[in-house]
Length: 203
Image (cartoon, rainbow, N blue to C red; front, side, top):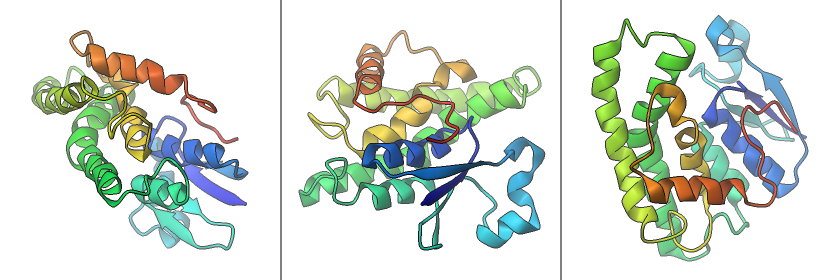
């Protein structure tokens, strides 16, 4: 059985849990309290030296860090990862965009505001970061104005990766009123078979 070491408030941890459910693979969920430093203990660091969740342990005991690496591993052989080489590369493109451009602004502001409660203390830093977040959402809006999903007519791993924190962006203060295509995509994704929303605490 797979094991996911994760935190139920984390979009990154929701990603592998979503894919495991899509694959019909049973898994065990181990809650890791990141706010209490549980991912920085010697025991956890022995499993993942980077001290972050999620961490996926495969049935044979091997471990895999980084949520999008987990998506790619679990997506092999499924319709979530296109067979066409160019379409696969477009999925990778969105995965890199999510981690480099989208998550550092959208997910980070959510964490600062909703969990660290720094909305007043870090007001200027939050405002500056939200400019970048809205720019990332704008990139998605333009693409979703052209295609139902990020890589075309069907959902892929790219949609899983970007749904994770986009659908909770409002928890950080982001307003999506001016992003109609993105809001329609969020609703469309949530209607997919087998969809389970956050928070995620296992199967």
